[in-house]
Length: 126
Image 1 (cartoon, rainbow, N blue to C red):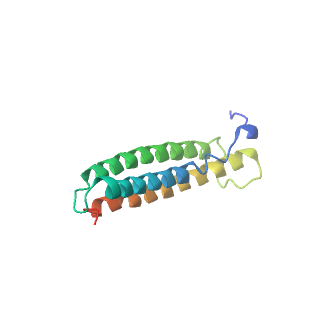
Image 2: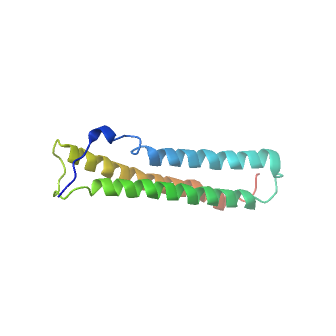
Image 3: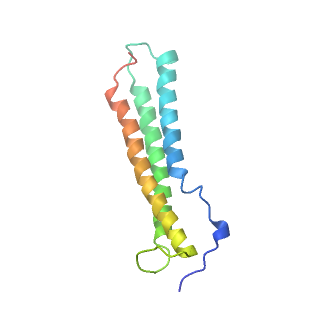
């Protein structure tokens, strides 16, 4: 027994949620480091507080991306039809958007990890 899908409740915002989380993470990390180096930390000072802040931002961003990816996986697995999901039906469109959401979430997680790696290699504001 499968439930009936209502396409009125569907939204494309879920599809772009993970890339938006990545963009926000990148912006917050960059602004934190830039403001800290410009106003707070001397040129040869330690960046350990900035590193901790970036680690916290990264953890929160990865949790958000994981939640969106999990939602995409649930949408992809909706119903019980067999592969391929290439019919022109509400169920297959639902599964396609779920699969695309899941793939964008994986890509965003990799991008977040690469943005956070910069904090490991930079030792001072110089």
